[in-house]
Structures are given as C-alpha cells and as structure tokens.
Length: 442
Image (tube, rainbow, N blue to C red; front, side):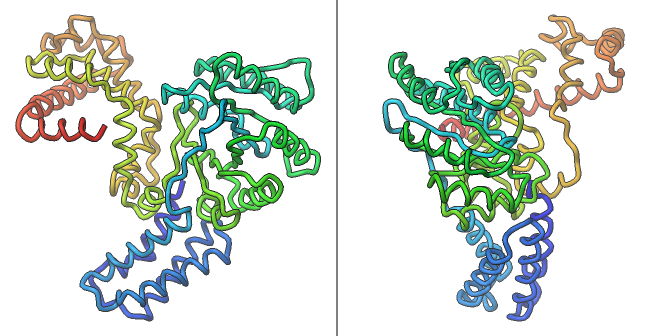
C-alpha cells in the first residue's frame, strides 16, 4: 500500500529536495503535482485541495524560499500535514469497564471476523487481558464456524448460541457469561451486509443500546478507497463510533481511505491490518505512516516488533555460544523463526529508511526462508551443531535432501560463516554498547 503515492510524492518534491533555486512559482507547481498524487490515491478532491493549500501557506509563511535547506524544510511541512490529516497521534482503546465491551461493525467482506480475532490475540498478548469472542452474526453462513476456527487458532474462547437468532440477546448473555468466567474484554462480532441498509443499522443500533460498549469500532477494507470513507460516514452518523480499523493494507490499496477518513468522520484510525496472520495487526501511528509515505521508513515500529520477539534469557544463551564459537544452524533457525514472527517480510523491509523505494516492484514471497530452512533441516544434528564438518560429500547429500544445488548449499554456508564472524565482533566494544542500548529500549 502507498507505493504509488510514495513514488508520485517523491517525484513531485524532487525539485524542492535538490539544491536548485526554489521560488514561489515552483512551490505552487509542486503543490499541483502533490494534489494530483493525492487524487490518484483516491483522496477526496476537497480534502486534497485543502491539504495542498495549507502546505503552501505554511511554506511561504516559514520563509522556505530563503531557508538554508529549503527542500528539507518543505518535506518536513508535507510530513507534518500528512500526520495531521491522518489524525495527529495514535489513539488507544478505552479498556475501562468490567468487562470492557468492544462492538465490531462494518460491511460484509471487510475482514471484521478475522480482525476480531486479531484484536483478541493482541489484547491477550498484553498478559492482563482475558478476551472473549462473541458470535453475534446469525445470518452469514459459516460466520459462527469461522469465529470458532479463529478462536481455536489463538487460544481464545468463543461464545455462541447456535439456536438463538436474536443478536441482542446473544450479546447480553455473552457479557453475563464473561462476568461469571473471569473474562475482562468482550469482543462482539456483528453481522455485516453487502451495502448499508436500514435493517442492518437498526440491528447494530439495538445491540449498541443494549450493551453500551466502551468501544464501537468500524472495520473497513482499505482496498475500497473513497467508498470506504462514504460507508464510514453512514455508520458514524447512526452509531457515533469511537474509531476505525483499516484492514488489508498489505494489498494494492491506493491509500485514499487512510488519508481521508479522519477528515470526513472526525474519528481516529486506531488499528490497521497488515496481512493474513493473526499477528498482523498494528496500532495506527499517523506520524510513522507519514514517514513511510515519504520514503523515510519506520524504524520505531521495526524496533517495537523486534522487542516483542526478544527473549532476554535466550539472548544470554546465544551470547555465550557466540563467545565460545558454538553458534550453529539450530541457533540460526531460531533467529529465522523470530524474524518470521515479526510479520510480512516486504512490510518489514519497507520500515527501513530508503528500502521502500528500492523494493518497489520487487515481489518478496512470505516463504522467502523456505529454501534456507529446507537446507538446514537436511543436515544431521552434528552438522547443524558444527557446520565446519560439512565437506564435499555431505554438501551433495544435503543438496539432494533439500531439493537444492551444491552451489546454494555453499552460498548458505558462506553467508552463515560471515554472519557468525560479524556476531563474534559484536560481542565486544561497540557491539556490546549497541546491545545494551537495545535492551534499554524495552
């Protein structure tokens, strides 16, 4: 997502980023290109025009034309305005109440049921939360079964009443069940429709009135662009929800919904869905998203994801092995598993400054490590513990067992040896300082 917008904004700001002379005329021309880029991203025309007018006013008001580095100042103004356009700052969930009740709303196909599971899994990871999923969609075939599968996958209980066709009763009974069974968050998955209709609105309004949720969240498919914004407005006019969830941001969405929705409904985007896995959920940070749109990466989110997978005890064991030259392929496999848990590989690469542009058009398979894992699993336990014993005949056997070539086995061994040397070097001096700094960020 945002690849096309990022590319066009980069092109529009190219002249101003350089060291050439900047005039009021080329600032105005650049803003025309920025507005065109926003319109291509399916941003509402009125919002795009207001955005570029604000940027132009601020640029001229801050003496960009006479600044020492006018291009950099101009990019900062665009970044700040993008941040404000998307909400300014991250908005958390209101988790008061015993239990906290979260009502999920949205159209059918928006990813509401799946995201209910992701949210439950995210809350469960906070250790103090015991979520309960509630199947209140009594119309869509297999909706209850889908939620059960999601619940089993993440280890969260799902409340169902198979014979009851009254979603208001189901929701009220689920809250009573949660109170009796120590569940402190109740996530109610409601029915969606293919389009906004009166029956749907009446039903979800009745559930809302009956359970008085602390959070009513509107789930919207980012792929639907400006239609998503219009649907959000229709829901908000009736429900007055607390926040928006944008799903499918890993797809080919143009970004218009993310950029426009706050201005239209005046409600924050609270979470985004970035993939199909239950762990592919992120708190929405407008400033970090603005950085990514402008090709500056998102190092903070990358560090946060790494910290979630960081195990201090495992890190200590690994440090001892590296110090004694005992780092082997079993340890390497553990590192791969941790990276995979951090999320979609292309998404992670996009968080590194400059990499978003470099990765444009490059398709990275989420199973990018599969070939490496196959080679490692084709090694004997002794070979994994002590790679130095892998000779020519062993390489041939490993290549046959993994469906790869001897050249690929050699490449992996070379890369592994280089990494082992680098990790050894990291044990002293600057390396230790960096590791301590990383621990201090926890």
